[in-house]
Length: 51
Length: 150
Image 1 (tube, each protein chain N blue to C red):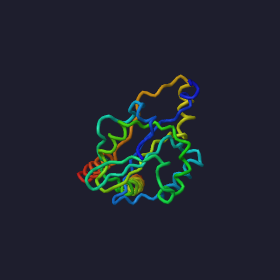
Image 2 (image 1 turned 135 degrees about the vertical axis):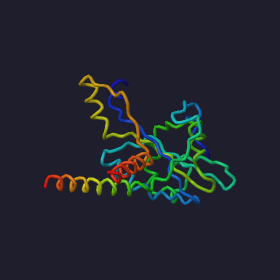
Image 3 (image 1 turned 90 degrees about the vertical axis):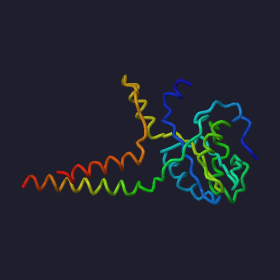
């Protein structure tokens, strides 16, 4: 077990500083839905203004 | 080598955690679909396991039982092994105890032709990044607040 020897000689591409946890991304769907709604709202707003 | 770099798309990485060490390779079909469509190329894939006491073990795909990997075995001999020992230590800091995690590094093949076209037309990339979901939410909420004030 363990990592391959090749990795021991590699320069870090992510580290060496510890990586912080990303905040939960469960909001993605909400953002998309929000964006869609907002676009529709704005379209309605523009249409209303044109009347 | 210049040609290779010229055609290299942006490279991203993620760490996906499976609480309770329930990693089983079920992500493989979706990953394979992205590869087969030419959307991405998998450059590296490592599996990390952190025990309840925080002890860490890293595994190459070849170390794992096929039942754990599923179709991820497909990548076993195709990895560039970009990640270093320091990288493993760095990403391990983000993993909770009693969890397993997959560290995935991939090239965004879809972006390579565009980037090449930009370079060939005399343009150059001067900035890029990823907008955190939290920042988008905050911006949308602030916008909502402004509209509420109108």
